[in-house]
Length: 184
Image 1 (tube, rainbow, N blue to C red):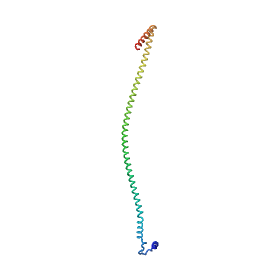
Image 2: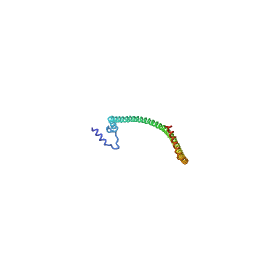
Image 3: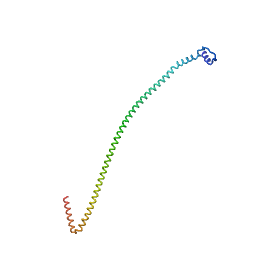
């Protein structure tokens, strides 16, 4: 033990510059001290260092496995997303095609409906014109008939006397009675 303490004390003592000699104190020499320290570190630190390295290796391997799993999951999701994208693009193309054909069909239907509406309006117009013509003709007939009747009555009244007038009425009543018997 005295040697150990002496070696520590001798570390505090530095020889003056100018003196050169061979150091026979084994514990005081640097290479030997370093080799002993390294040997102790290797002997005792080997387990700790290998444990740390194994631990680090396991963490790295776990990280790699996790990354591979995530990569696999990401590739699977990418494939699914690609399949969905292709499906959606296909449906969009179908919708576009169907939409264009639907637009054309609606356009044709609208044109046909418009033509039918125009035909109906033309028919209503023609019916209205015929109705108005018929009404005008009937009004003219009524007016002509009324004027003819007034003229005939005026002529009869001026030409007929009371006796002739009564005889004409009786004859007409008799004719109406016969017509009634024939039809009834």
